[in-house]
Image 1 (cartoon, rainbow, N blue to C red):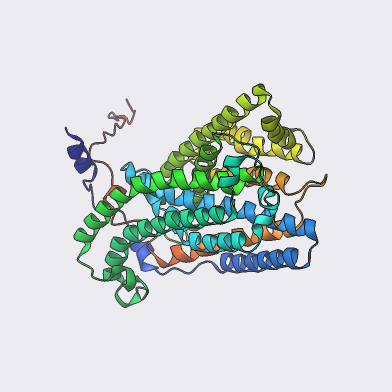
Image 2 (cartoon, rainbow, N blue to C red):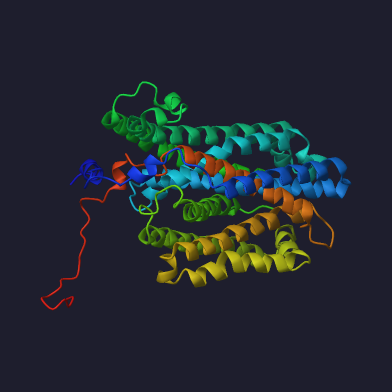
Length: 452
């Protein structure tokens, strides 16, 4: 059988398709009042802490505030883009197991425009003051060329804009057949803004095929763009804080862990929203078992890439390289933080996710995902803040907590608001159905009810 035949067989629809009547009947859904109120309150607290730290703090407080703002930007750009890349990977790999999570991953793209605007404000509005190379000229000629302010800001804003625009285009292509088919069922109850995406509707069958053809071509482009552009973000936004240190694996470590971060946030959001979205019957323990296995695999890969960087630097014992590690692993107040990161990103998830049963319990798996997501935030904090804060105390006080709360509140508010307005699963997608080539073996019961 040729590759074309295999793909054609994989796209065959089996059965009547996913049961989305309950979910569509409630569309647009109402975000639970507690989630919306908490999100808006957190946004307000974050804005006040950011303004207060920058407007009324001394020089050190302003640097701490900018450092925390950068940490949150890098973290949530990774989480948001990582969620989109999960959906892109499902498309490129013709995957079925993760299809019920696909719309949740796509919803993360809605936070990307806000992140881009905040990143632009940071780069243009004075955030570069925390970069040593910006304040003190670099003596190395090739680094002096690369770390020029205009070139730095330009490539960051253009690169992220290209990637975020591709993400929005991918999500639009994916949404169109679902919105059009749902609008035919909902009639006047369909949100008015759907018509901007479904203009020129040609029927469900044609639109599903058109969306598939567009995104199957766009997916590999996005994967390549993600690897290249997030490598640039890792080098520029994070690694250049220490301009005399370098690691060849650092960019890959960042963009793969960002994908892992997106997967964990998909797990968290799905567990806490699937009931009020009416899709709990479509995101089953089997699906959580599958995403749990991916979380476990990425946990191992994160650890591998960490040690692949640390061991050559450590045993090479060159001062320009080992100083970066010594500061974070052995010097207070960062040393205890490094142990927390290792525990939350490897020891705890590796130990717990070995259990097959825990991966099938949505709430338990979401708890593990929260541990990993928190650990990865601490890891980003540990990469950024030691280059910004040079004192013995840990720079994690009310201002930092407030800024973090603002980002979390903004992310959750945007994602849940979007999911409430659209079909929560890609119900017109043929890959939501079982693969006709799959063979399912069931136990045979004899006349006495005993399985053989």
